[in-house]
Amino acid sequence: MDPQIDYKYFYENSPDMFLSAEPQTAKIIACNRTMQLNLGYRKDELLGKKVIEIYSPECHEKVKENLDSFRLTGALIYSDLVALKKNGDTIDVSLKLTPIRDEQGRLLYSNAILRDISELKEAQRALQQEQEKSERLLLNILPECISDRLKDNASIIADGIASSTILFSDIVGFTAMSETLSPEQLVALLNTIFTEFDNLVEAYELEKIKTIGDAYMIASGVPVAREDHAEAIAELALEMISVINRLNSDLGIPLDIRIGVNSGPVIAGVIGKKKFAYDLWGDSVNTAARMESHGIPGEIQITESTYNMLKGNYVCEERGIIEVKGKGPMKTYLLKGK
Image (cartoon, rainbow, N blue to C red; front, side, top):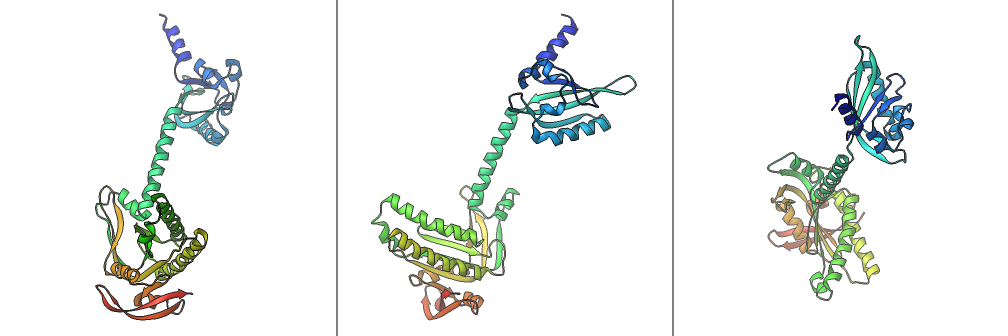
């Protein structure tokens, strides 16, 4: 077979789109059959058309930059662009732009190879969506800064937090209430309550640590330090009481809540391999839990350490000395408002 015929057949029927353009005017002077088929034009419609017209408007600026750079340097250019079909549809393409010169090195015209990379781009977009979904799921489990450390292959994540405030809440009589509800009703009720609490946690930029049954644990000043950690928890606790009172009215269910708060140092870290979790440890955590379990329904019981951070800005009522399991006698206060 004649090599010239071989070349022409390859040029016209290559899976890639070929075009040649005059460098100064950037008008198309030649194109192959594949380009005509892929873009939906007749050959006579493509010849004389400015190169920029076969690209989507969203990448016109990039095309202009490529053409300006090519005119200036005549250097090889690679670029990912979006080609525009005659009917308005688009195709993701990779561009390879090469100069054709005469014997004196003068630029005669440019040859462009456009490869359809739509499937590749679609796969990349799908992968990106899955990565974003995984990222959102991870951020539902871990604080963002902790997630970043895990992605940086930190083997152990353990931090000593010098000052923080911890809140525990518990729905009073929930065990007895659950015996009167169907599984669907029980889960729906918890979901309603905890969704309200989640919204508050987000609004006050606090950290939800975990839920256990009907118990809800929140931390402030963890993992990122903040000077107002006690005040932020106080605001949240007062809002939680308001939420329960409103749900009582809206749902017609006699709900009540105990809230316990303590401030102090904690250890924070990630444990587990498969179902890992960000958690807190230390005496401050245990004391906050005791404030809840030894609390009064409908009240926010706080320790003296938290009271000392809030006094002057919040209304607190001294409860007095109470016997606390594992701690002995402790002076506690009830947070009433601001």
